[in-house]
Length: 219
Image (cartoon, rainbow, N blue to C red; front, side, top):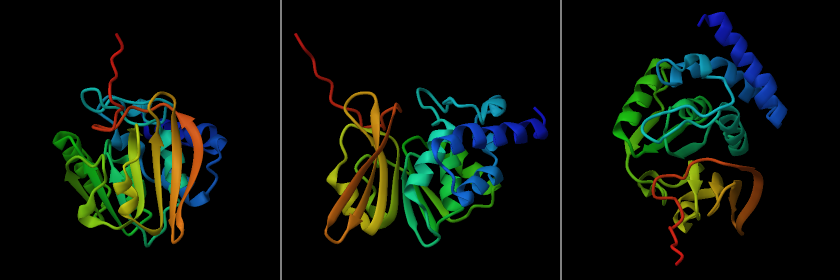
């Protein structure tokens, strides 16, 4: 696939997927133009990097579609001084967007192979304000808290209170919640007086490892 074809696919993705879903911030659109998503997908899937679809990562893991990644990024409203917790590194593409817009990103991944591939991709883009650590962050990651932004790249049946404990005052958290499909994308802002919650849109994404609802058996 030629670079000009990829460039056209990227422009079409921005116009027909991202802008049409209300993401109009020019800073975000410029990042989407500048960071080559085709370098963050598996070998052989480059031609689908800008298609409105999930792509395989490893095992049952998949990437989020590009328009959903852009919408989540937009909801976070990242700023240059923000310190970020990303739960679920995945391909590393959203990590790259965050690292290009904030002070520092801590990204937590359960799969060492996926994590190492993301590290390589981020190094290739000269993004050195990221650390990818291995572990279960389904209840947050207290090690480097508090965070100004928290993004959960997978659905959760319920949001543990520990996430909000790890969020700085003025901080924003974006996640997908629900015990059944579709999930609801929720934004929470921590203020001195408590948490302001906003439901943004419905979507269907896989549950985070250790974040799925309990299985109930009926007889």
